[in-house]
Image (tube, rainbow, N blue to C red; front, side):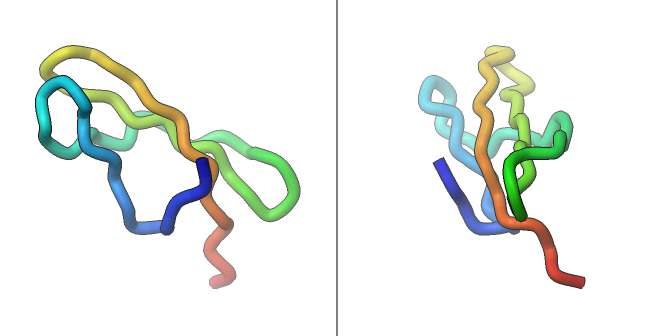
Length: 53
């Protein structure tokens, strides 16, 4: 899934914003961001475009 750079996903179980846990290099002009729920420890990975600045 590709998302906006300032978007944090909602935890499907707890219905609140997940926290950014780590950023890893992705494919061409993308980075992989891993988000974690602090309550239920669920994780979700999103591909995001690199910031041009």
